[in-house]
View 1 (spheres, rainbow, N blue to C red):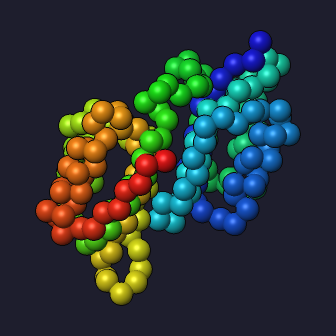
View 2 (cartoon, one colour; view 1 turned 120 degrees about the vertical axis):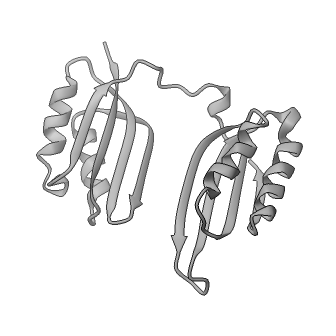
Length: 174
């Protein structure tokens, strides 16, 4: 019987990394579900929930990934995933929001509180210091599920919070 695992990899960023990881998983007949890959500073992180054939054990996947030259020095974790591989309604993206401005401590905490206050679920968030004209330009991209009945007031609260922090925001429904 097929079984789900969570695969998490953290390692130095290098060219061809994602191709090597996904190629290895494909060769083992692992079916990648929800997945995320990001460069974080000089590191890279890959996380996925994958379905493995019943003949493939989590430790075999871990061993195969750790044997890849592209993953030299990587932290690889392959563990059973019992929470369910299918997203609930609140895991579906209904809005995309981009907030931009000068970085400061507590910025992400203040903005995410505005979502929580309206029962919204942040499905994905990416933050990045961007090089450009402004020395400390910071971009926050959020994909969220917002209950339809509260979407308008939630987005107004997020925009007000952003403006109070001297940031610009743009949102659009999906």
